[in-house]
Image (tube, rainbow, N blue to C red; front, side, top):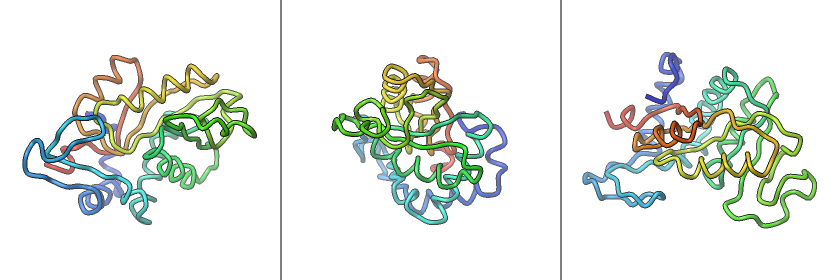
Length: 197
């Protein structure tokens, strides 16, 4: 289970489950109903963008992420476009202590992101050129491949250390095991079975 101990006891957690069911979840009824970004087929589809763009759901996601990040500790949050961009913004906006900053990693560098920040090409937002601890964010985790790619880029191209990956939802389809094999701490706010029963 990738949900941190005690997180389900948070009053906002049950509200988030309901909002994700209402805003993000489709049950196609058969195992090949949807083709996912990973290329796999699935009965279940989760689109977290409506969750992140909803005032109540977005605030809860940001606050619960910050609750976990406060315990883990980091200087920066970010991840691969597109899902991690609004997620990083939510986390930064609901960090009421204003201690962390956000960034995004483009899937392919445009070559102009580091002019002011000295970040490597394709890493945009706050400057992470001076190093620090990073939590990589992900909206939905299936295999973990995208987040592992972001971890590798950050650790190879900057002086930063990735201390964890946190996802809104773990589809329970091998992501946890992939992160374990790569030696990366991983957790999520929700798992698929929280939504599908």
